[in-house]
Length: 105
Image (cartoon, rainbow, N blue to C red; front, side, top):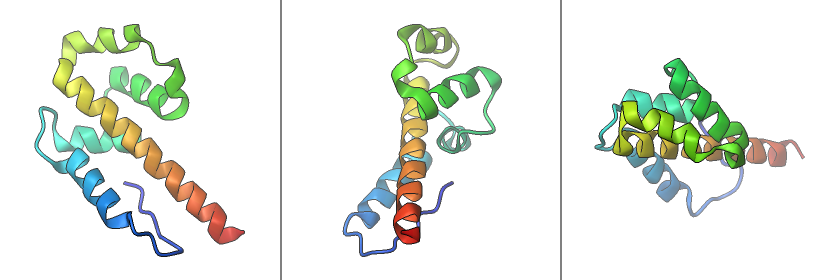
């Protein structure tokens, strides 16, 4: 999981971290390890890896067909959790990159 080191005071850090914790380790239909892997963007079965990579790098390219193919195997609830985990993981990576750039500036 991406750890974000805050350079300045961030009044939202605690809430953001709690939300991430709930998404990745809270109760759900999919295993916490699978959600964490989706957030990290690595260590997934090949079929999910393709979708998660697309979500994390080019979310605007994800189609209904991309999801529908996997829904038959994973179901609606598990797919929702995997997609949300991938999106949250991508947002954390971007936050970390932005904060790193600010620190270096």
